[in-house]
Image 1 (cartoon, rainbow, N blue to C red):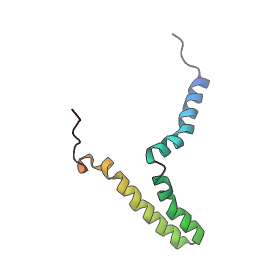
Image 2: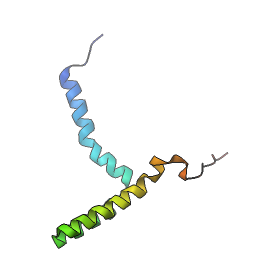
Image 3: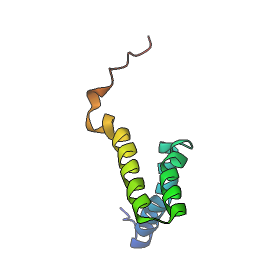
Image 4: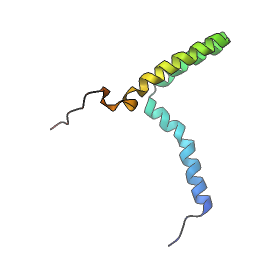
Length: 83
């Protein structure tokens, strides 16, 4: 049996890594990415460490909200399958 060469494995890993960003965009969706970016852009526009810290806290809250069903799968009621 032929085993894949190192070059093939490296190309596969690099391809998976390179497409990870676009996969993440598809999972978050075209609406959520700009919502997550807004606090960062505002903080950079203000050019203030205080605003950057506020943006961090805002992003932290937004991401913690997105994580709720990952941390506690029972948070949403089970969906009935269509029969």
